[in-house]
Image (cartoon, rainbow, N blue to C red; front, side, top):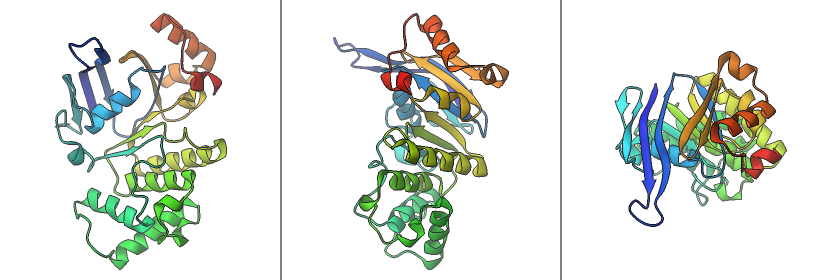
Length: 264
């Protein structure tokens, strides 16, 4: 479903600031896989997402999505098949537009219908039902501007926008990290429910090591732009947080330096 082979990305090539962000990265995902991604600061996790989404173009390697080579495809074209959520709830939405207008934009992009003046009644009714399913009372606030919602409400709507037309791939870049623990848990529960109901292939960066072993069906660890550990099946089921930290030390020959991960 997703095939990444020999991916490379170097910033500042040929300068004193040259930095290898992604180094010979390869990964193969099956349809419906839910992969959690962990790693220290500067491990290349967000850069990997930017390469998959088309924000950056790679210096080498190949990315296939559902058999199609998207390695150098424009970002706006990939957005028709790839949903993405960011850590910052302010990203990914238009704050001055209403909930239903934001949902109409997302729906139009996914169906290639575009955005026109006025929202058809049938679409508005569908948006209302989708919002009601979130269980946050947002179905009564469809005319409210996105910028007036709380961080948790906004992230829940952004999740709905990313999946209102089922994507082939969903990228979650620490999408609950900026939320308080209670709200983060609710958004995670919504995420799991939507992903499960639609069988969406998902990649989720997280700073919570415990959650990385509990959510989804596979966990990968990155360090200095490389994949150093790929856990699934029985090996993942028997893995503990202390053991995972020990494995990181063995594989990378250093201590994990992400304070948020260690504190979580």
